[in-house]
Amino acid sequence: MNNDDLRVCFVGDSFVAGTNDPEYLGWTGRVAALAWRRGYPLTCYNLGIRRETSSDIARRWLSEASCRLPEHCRTFLVFSFGVNDTTLENGRTRVAEAQSVENTRPILKAAEERHSVLLVGPPPIGDNDQNQRTEHLSRRMSEVAAQEGVPFLSVFEALSQDPVWMAEVNADDGAHPRAAGYEKLAALVDRWPAWWFK
Amino acid sequence: MNNDDLRVCFVGDSFVAGTNDPEYLGWTGRVAALAWRRGYPLTCYNLGIRRETSSDIARRWLSEASCRLPEHCRTFLVFSFGVNDTTLENGRTRVAEAQSVENTRPILKAAEERHSVLLVGPPPIGDNDQNQRTEHLSRRMSEVAAQEGVPFLSVFEALSQDPVWMAEVNADDGAHPRAAGYEKLAALVDRWPAWWFK
Image (cartoon, rainbow over all chains, first blue to last red; front, top):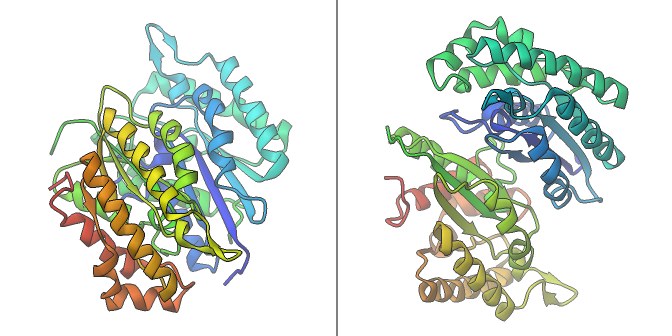
């Protein structure tokens, strides 16, 4: 068992929050439970909020993470957002792609000053047009992450080709999976070489 | 299945956060999963933070809850705190009992203006002297809650007499149970008549 006091904040949108998982674990609870079994008793805080765009997250993440990641602990931040940015409202995306990119950069920059940081890209949903925008945004986010030296996990392609994820998304509200879909996303994060708790 | 958009924030300390539960559900995840099985697909946000006293929670709860409980939804708040208030530091409790009471009152008052509200009392830990202070504080909190018209659940006595809770608390860090203990606390909340999702 690792004796360090390890504190992790997961910051993002409804996918981070685990919306529509009847088991109330989402992907974050599942990766935490896997880490525990390997001897890392993580303290995890889930800071996902439904409907939030990168602009919403840019406004709140620092105050919410700061009171959860004290200096005497080893502290980690995982961000994941983007799908709500690419949603159409009144004929335009809720956040323009260039703005999404410009929201992401200072988040990563400020987070890295104090914590270990990872960025997980946005997943596909049940809307093909929006998925095209999300896939493009995911690529732009990966470029920003590379520039800032933050490891980026693209989940878009793997989940688009995952029959479990896509079936659950389409069977339910057109956006969120249920337990099995979240388990698939958790597995992608868990086997990602950049994930800390191996 | 209930079609209302039901949003619940659980606000409090490490017991709310589910610290030391290897299954990463805590009591809040367990009561949510039970509610789902009865047809209430709750959106839950866990706003428990380790080491936080009633003074810490008084400072942050409103901003954190507000962005998670939008007006177009049916919104619910469950508070639970107190054990960290009664911890000794340099010969005095971290928060004086009178101050704990005066922190609790405005939290409940402001929360009730917009949301359905419950208060769950502090549980026992592995320290008999602190438990006496916590039991006394729990009684004072129940009085404040009654004055403010907020249902209060005392868990102190039931968990003190619960061999599963006390064994897990004492076997681990002297404060937090593991999965089985959190399941016991979840059962107390779930069968409480004031709990909304029956």
